[in-house]
Figure: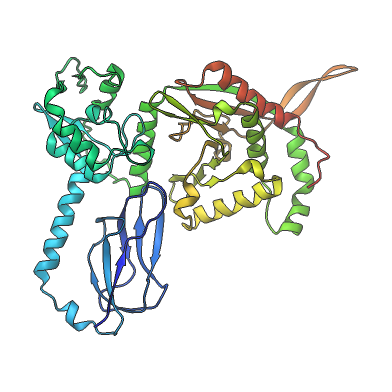
Length: 455
């Protein structure tokens, strides 16, 4: 009997594992070539994986909510249409496999290491934003290596990632190095360990690594709602971002009357010609791209004590999903697109996001992000930076406001369309001067918009 192994494919840069979120076929079902077989969820996006062969599904090696690594065999398909022999294999072997996977998943999810009687949480991303694989985290747990110590290891993998070889080398040389010991120096569930002397070890990182969440006891009648997978990922990323980057926010008010009038004038024509709507978002993105060219140090990332200046300008746009969660698809090389091209990219990515059709590469590589808090009626906000970027711009609701209008004949009061721009930036590398000048320049480009512009 010919059997085809279905492996978890590579699903984008930095994606090393995926959670089986739903099997679309049961053992014994007939499967066609390229027919959706299983739904998987990564920390980037959800995907349907198509079958690589036509036949009968005879074995599933991972069950729902279990974690598989890229390259793992997740299912076996018989191309002879015979489901008997494999499906009759002893259940004990499969149950052992499942139990083993559950044990591994438990280690990866909890990732708790004990150091001298205290616990230190090992998350997928360290305070520096560095990613740690499940294997590295499990070795750290076994060897009692804290997150603070992990951050001191110089990784030899791609983008400085710590590999198995790196951490084992660290373990072998660890005996000659002072080891961090945890001592409580505060209350309110905060434990600050005394860290090993190291150029990259700081009191602030030690403090952040060991903040303990409060234990909340529900009151009678309270409802407990478990976070879904995406909400857990968002929560983890937001907390990590606030820990990594000291956030500062600058605000500017912009007069967008010319933009509002121009869009009202051209939107019907654009719909007839292109078959889709033109919103304000592409216009905002165009202004952001121009400002980034004027201030390229906004388009950077931080790696340790190094600043990485990004060549490409890739604009992420925060998109609300029907579930209430948030995802950030990315317009790649936005500086190479005209307004029509940006509009089509915005519409396509937004529609794919709402219909759960984004690909992993659609949400990777962003260098700057825009979020529209005005779509919910908010006039301004203080957005959290999407790591490893260093800045994010929130655009507020456009409102009709009385305003002083200056003319050669004198000043008078008129009704203008105005909005607030809120620019949050990483104060490690973006000072108030740069952060403030950038958002002011975005507002200038919006206010200078040509009302006679041709599409």
